[in-house]
Image 1 (cartoon, helix red, strand yellow):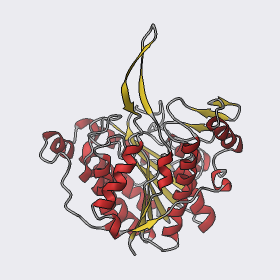
Image 2 (cartoon, one colour):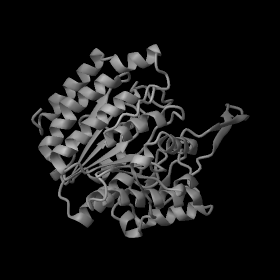
Image 3 (cartoon, one colour):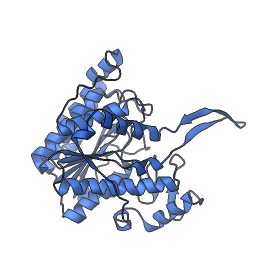
Image 4 (cartoon, rainbow, N blue to C red):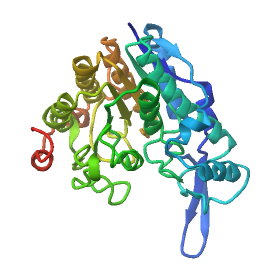
Length: 376
């Protein structure tokens, strides 16, 4: 079986707009437009990169579909869905129904894209579970892992990973799903959804003390029957490739082997890269390739290769396509010889080789903590 690539032109209807205004104590002034960090051009360029590099030609192109209401309502509330529709038509950003934070643009086009992204996540799971493809990269827009039950947050409207996991459980009767979230920002919405649920193991690697505030702390491990099934691995700025790979080898893989999920989902945010403007984690495209190889190997070991990667963040228009292509290469098991955008740069070499004492200490602290529930 080959790999699948899920993408739909309707994702591009979510236009986050531009930023032009600078606020002062007395008023404001205007500059030339600067694209919103979650610029639609990032996904467009990534799609072009996959197509023109020849990677798409090696994959099965999977279409998306709009999510059905019942698929969204496994997590989100009906008043929230109604509030989103009302806001897109000119209504308020918050009310008894919930809230849309100021950083998350929601228009009629955004809702069309969000419905298709959530439905696309379900379609990706279906393709893997039905044996049409071995694994899938779902190039979704908008992202989802910050979205809460009745709150659009951090550029996210619907929580694609939660909806995909619930679709897998309800449609295919799965008892164990593992979500690995390597987006540099903590997946607070995904954590919330499964905090008391041992049927979904949520593992998050993210920049420590970053976003959202007080989210993703080491001590946040679950509640009730779900204690131990939320695994947060907060990492210091400057972790780089070696630190992330060590985190996978020392924590993520051993826990995954013990849990033995029947399906693995990745919340794949490429915003841990050394060129990302919203974080400081110093990953390279080769680092993302290695993480993908490790997760694909875990999937081969425990669930017949069933793996779905869902696009989350990543805000470097120049570098996200390179990192995403490296992940896709790993899922396919090929290497097209793509030369890194900044090959030969000292910063790139440093990102690939750094392994600081702060990172080592963070990993040791995480191992000590999670040994309460997992043999590490």
